[in-house]
Length: 127
Length: 346
Image 1 (cartoon, rainbow over the protein chains, first blue to last red):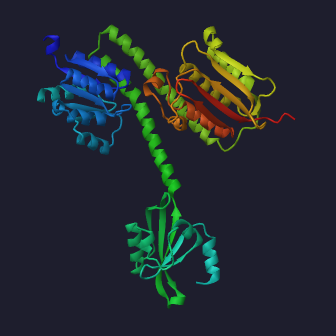
Image 2: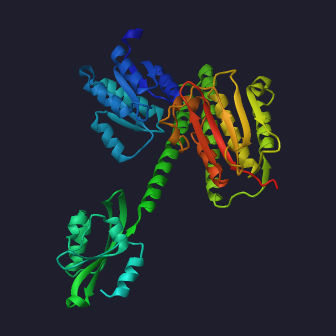
Image 3: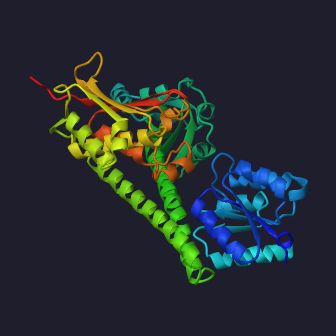
């Protein structure tokens, strides 16, 4: 498969170690990856690259994951892109709010990398 | 109501309200009048308390139910949480007609403390979960997809070391804070020369790094620097402040530490740590000593901050009956001034 034919995953994570972890594993699985560390950059990068899937951390400085998620959904091209939300909180109310703004899946930290990769694959196929 | 009973009720700090069978206010004690400032005699209870649960509980007691308690938040000048006890009573002067007596115990401070504890636990778990997520993920990756990838292993191990150091620092700081709070009530009594404390910190911070040591300019008037304090704790204060000043200011710029008798008062010694950093936006200054409050999370993480340094400084100064003042202007650096009780030099 050529580089450009591979599906693109946008990772929005402000913890550099976790971003690195996701990048390595996603690339090992054959996907292309772009990483950004803030909500504002996420929206810019989303418009620029139109990724096939977004992995979005909930707790971001300034613009939160929830706000980024709902902004992407409002964008007419972003209505159907799969969004997986990562969070360090595990409370049910947060989960509901995440689903409410249109996240497709919700993953609580610390997560299993293998499980996360499976969910990425599943969401990319469905889409 | 008898005069003596009235004076007893007026002597209570708890607001007391008595309502008749039609839920009309028949008596308020002084504390009650101070709280429900718009209340007048013969008003309906619902004119001053809109809370439905409180009204229903009162109605039920007036209908013959036994004494009961409800927890409500009432919107006064400041919204206040109360535990309201509603008990039946008879009034002799009104042919033993059934009334209800309500007493309002202010439980706002209990609710606030509970909320703070809840927020704190949530914050700590978040702060620990971030490095833990990285560690768990790297272990899984090294055992699976990165098995045999020596370059990745080397890089991941370095990151794992930094993440575990971060967890260890966080735990150290949390323990430090908790120990401090436990002994906050007993102020230290030893005499400490602040000049010695600062000089020790400068030596330990600079280590063998002569360049770094030269950046810290200390100006102390000898003999005017004896304070009442705990040497180790004061060491922690100045280590934190000087380290922050170095980390948040441009490489090579000076960090100035001065100590002198506080202006307009010889009861305090003032130690100022001034940097030439970016300065702090005034909106952040009041919140800087809150636990886990960070102006720039990424920058704090990059310099190894736990988000607890200034909270520790604040609690040490509370223990010392001292204080911290922060002055800063964007683009012009910051000054952190520590005020400590001076030792009597008579």
